[in-house]
Amino acid sequence: MLELTGLTRRYGSLTALDGVGLRLAPGARHAVIGPNGAGKTTLLNLIAGTERPSEGSVVLDGRDLSRTAPARRARRGIARSFQQPSVIAELTVLDNLVLAGWRHRPAGHAGPRGLFGAGRRRRREETARAGLAAVGLAGYAARRASELSHGQRRLLDLAAALATSPRVLLLDEPAAGLTDRDVDRLLGVLGALPDDVAMLLVEHHTEVVAELADTVTVLVDGRELVAGPVRTALDHPAVRDAYLGTG
Ligand code: ATP
Image 1 (cartoon, protein in one colour):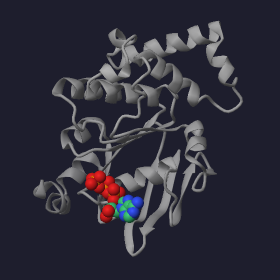
Image 2: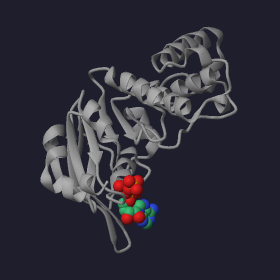
Image 3: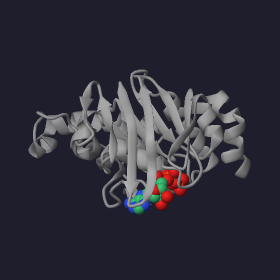
Image 4: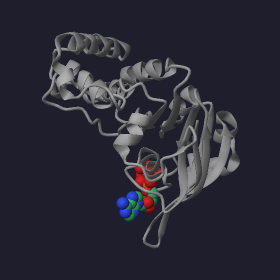
């Protein structure tokens, strides 16, 4: 269970996020929408740990992570897929996933040398190949990541986040810049997430939100405008005025 309480982030006199609260149970499918500058990315940064809150807390399974470094949060199960994919262009597609699974290994596992032990390496490759198949990239395993299209790199980045066996998956506009075909593939992958993974999705495409999310928070100027079931939130008059009506 991820619990956000009174999350606030100030930059000088600007309050980017203002007292936002949210509870995500395992299996939750929650979206955050809102106009540009509403504080959506700031919210993801505070959960992933790349930013610290000015006030408020981030608690995962009863443990306060508000001041915990991003890598440690990742090991606790908070994974993030970025708007700009964070894959390593020079490595093969397969090695990107092998590395992703290894980098986020739970504390206490074997160190770097373990990556190259033959049996371990084979097992990691098998897992990575299954991860590639899940996002439709099985045929690209031996290619360099630099040869992939933007959409394929985003899918690889998503597979890398999933390779860490996350408890909470943070998605920053996963459909941005994707072709219709890749959006369909993305919807297939995210629609089949394991039941115990909580998903927090920041997304401008309301069709994607309606398809994937059960509940929505609408942020405007850093504050929660509306929160609730996806249809209620998207149809709310104040949301149409503040956000959708302007689109
Ligand atoms: P978009 O949809 O455009 O990505 P957003 O909802 O993700 O917008 P944020 O990126 O979270 O919004 O930004 C919220 C506000 O905080 C904006 O006014 C932004 O300019 C400001 N902001 C974000 N990061 C910083 C920073 N590092 N320093 C100063 N101001 C910042």
